[in-house]
Picture (cartoon, rainbow, N blue to C red):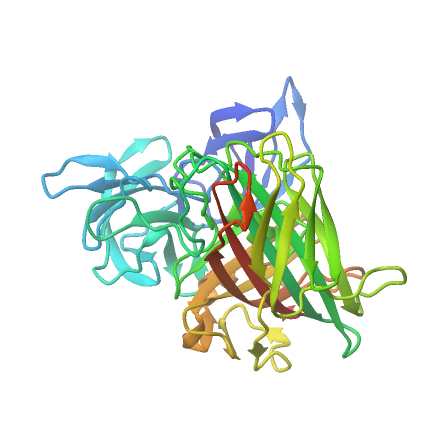
Length: 459
């Protein structure tokens, strides 16, 4: 039941599960502040404050969570429809159909596909309760890839949730992104991170070196590209993605690692632990219950503590080796430590105006490498995490985060404790690495991430 403007308004429930209620508001519901009450077995919940807007567009995703691949159909010139998928990408210039909700009385709908703007046509008739379809033509100059971001704009500073669409010129599977495409049944992915964070209360940097390594199969299924290479949250260069989730404390390293390693149907056992060697120094990372190998390699500056090892990932080559496990025998791999670069306006980027967007600048990143910009914060009252992720080629030298997507990042709150309002600029290098020796390991890739970060104020 919804209480609004002094009236009690019944809400039509569509689907009810233990942790989720999907419902439909009557079109006559007046906009403004309201209270929502859920009654079960005659017992009413406490009122929950909500705001009713004349329109607030949302796009359905195939996983039902509002992020990832959108519920989008490709429309052929003959009128035939087929689900957009990594194995069935849309072509630039092709018409598509998008399943949406919450359009209200909007007559014209702006769709942003890969940072290109198009106008969509409302089809009028609802597909089901609360759902309807938009048809739009993909711009001919849209960036191509498996994870091209797509969202709706109600105003220049208010965007819907962001989903992705697979786009490729011509037939065949789309390109998944930065990780080299590998084939085989037993593959390895080595991800090395150096994070330099400007601390909040001093000019001393916090330096952390980490490794996340996983072994798996190229046959991942679930509409993940058929290779061990899916940077699923990383959009094509020059575009941005955004999502809202529950509280995630791991930060940038896990954001990139999950996206690089996500989608695995299974993981392979390559031993109890792996050893990383650089000259006379070595570090060990153990195998976690989820099958990953993960560990801190060293720390410096404000992150250094008594008894901890110093920084390990200095520029240059290092060796990853294992004595073997149940699935993969002994092997040795070569990988490069992340290469440094300069975020030229780091000191000046202390305040982010979410209504105007923000531009960052860098230098020293080779043109063929990817630059990743991540804006993230946690609403410490609701514990909701908002993240905006943008990419660019190193040669671009700058990138602007759109205001409409920064709106997904919560504003800074004056609450004591650990600050979560962070901004990162990172350089990503990736290449295929051939096992020096290997028993059962058919291929591998190495990813180096050098990240510069700071605490900011999101206004």
